[in-house]
Image (spheres, rainbow, N blue to C red):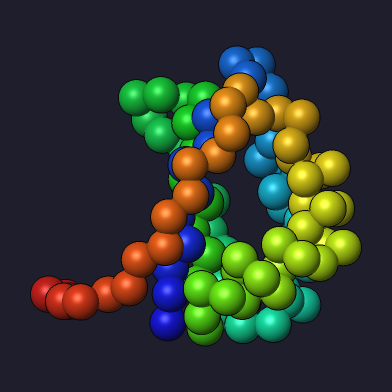
Length: 99
């Protein structure tokens, strides 16, 4: 299992609309090959900063399957205009667990 972490800074004043756009996009992710879960978190210290956490079976499910799909284009239409800067994305895998 791979965890995609996307740090997304949105234009100040658009936070609520961005959150609504992500909520509208949930079905786009649910139907993607290898997509297991999605969660959006908002920073307390920097309220225009969000982190999107998406669990995928493989990195390619995100980078090839999703990014090459019409659903990715729809995702960008729903939320892309809120981005203050391009999202910073990385993929991680769990190597240790304490709880």
